[in-house]
Image (cartoon, rainbow, N blue to C red; front, side):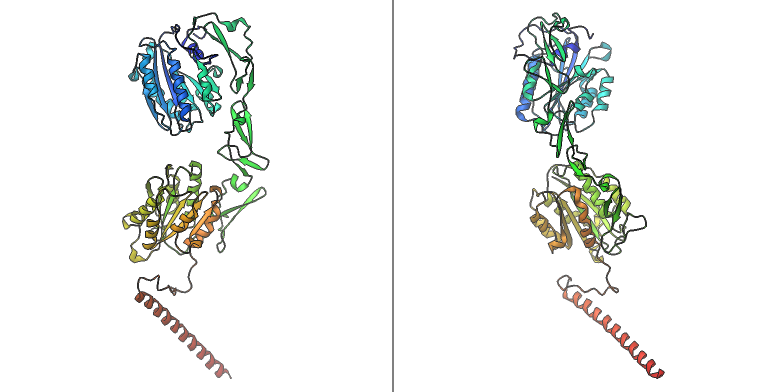
Length: 583
C-alpha cells in the first residue's frame, strides 16, 4: 500500500506538502477509495483570531481537494482547548458545501490545550460507527490530522499509542509555538512522514494537495534529478522538497537550514536559549539550576534540591544542610521540627487565593506553605481547629473547622485541594468566611467559650470586587484578620483586610519561592508567648464587652496582688522573728 501513489497515506502526504503557488482546486481529484478522515483542530487561547481564520481557510482549501462521498472519503472535524467539541461527525455530511459552511461558522473555544483529551475523544467517539465511521471489518483506513500551535497541558504519548494500536494513523502538524517532542509522541511511524512543523500560521496555507493535472503520474522523485537536500515528495506531475524536523526549506526550495527557534523571541528563557531540532531549550548559567517550568533559573541551594523536611527554615552548608527554628523555640530531637504552640488555641480559617494568576506550580507552593503553618499548631478538637476556603471567581469550602482533629489529617486534606483558576473575588470570600466559616454548624466553638477566631487571607493580586464592607464586618465580628500578600498583591487591600496594627497583621513576599520567611511572624502572632502566673492578664476596657467585665477583671487582679503582698509581708515578719531569736 505504501508504494501506491493513490494510497490513503500518500494522499495525506500530498495533502500536507507545500504549495509552490496558490492553486484553485478545479481539476480532477485522486480516486483514493474509501477513507475515514478526522481533523483535530487546536482552538486554544494561544491561537489568535487572525491565526484561527488562516487555519479555517486551510481546512476549506483541503476539503476542495478531496473526493468526498458516503462511499469515498468521509470527513469529520473536532476542535479542542480545555474541552472537546465536535464540529461535524464523519457521517454528518456527504456534500463538500455543507462541510465548508460548518467550518466557516466555527467559533474558537479559546481556553487551554488538552491535546491528549482530544485524541481520546477522536479514538473513542469520532471514529466510532455511531458517529459515521465504517466498521473495522470493512478495513477502511482511519486517519487523524492534528493541527496545534502549542505544548499540550496533558499527557499525549500514552493515549496516542492506544489510538495507533486501534489502527488510527496520526499526522501531527505543528505551527509556530508547537512542541516538536509532543508532535513526535503523537504521530505514527515513520515520524519523518507524519510530523510537520511550520514557522507561522501564514505558512500553513502552503500545505495542501495539488489537484491540477494527473494525480497518478510518474514519480519524479525516483529519477534522482530533483536536487532535494533532505526529502523529495512526489505530487501529480511534479514534486516538492521537504526538510527533516527542525529544519526549514530555503529560498531555492531545495536546500535546508536549521531552524533557530530562539530567534522567534517567544522562548521566555530567564538565562540562555539553545536551539535544538526539537525546539528551543533553556539553559542556566553556572551555579544555577533549571526549575521545573523549564524556563526559570534558581541559584543552586541544597535546601531547594532535596526534601529536607525542616519545619521552619533550612540553611545550606556546603554539601549538607541544617534546620533552624524561630527565636524562642528549640529544635527537637529529630533535627527538623520545632516545639509547637503550648497556648493560643484558636479557631483558624485560611482563605487561599486560587485565581488563574497564581498558576498551578505556585498553588502547590501555597499548599506547602499552609501545611508549614499547620506544623506549628496544636491541632485537636479541644486545641486549635483549622478550616480552609479557596476562592477565585467563586468560593469553595475545602474543609470546615470541625472536620479534622489532627495536624496529619489537615495536611493530607490540604494536599488534596484542587486548583480552581479564573478570577479573584476576595470580597466574596470574606463574606463567605463571616457568614459561614465561623458558624457553629461548620465547627466553630460557641462565642461563650471565648475561643479566639482568626482569619488568614492569602492572595497574589488585586481583588475584582469590593472588599471594604466584609473586611470591616469581619473585624466587627471579633475575627482577628491577617493578610499575606505575594507578588502583585496590593498593599492597600492587604492593610484594609488586616486587623490593627497593620505592621503585626500584614505580611508580604515578592515571590512564591521565598514565602518561608513569613512563617516566623505568623507563628509569633498566632502562637503568643505563655503568660505569667495563672490568668492575671488585664485587658483594655475597649476590648471588653462591658465596663463591668473590665472592672471585675481589674478588681480580681488587685485582690490577688494584695493577697500576694500580704503573704510576702508575713514571710518577712517570720524571718525577722527568727533572726531576733538567734541573737
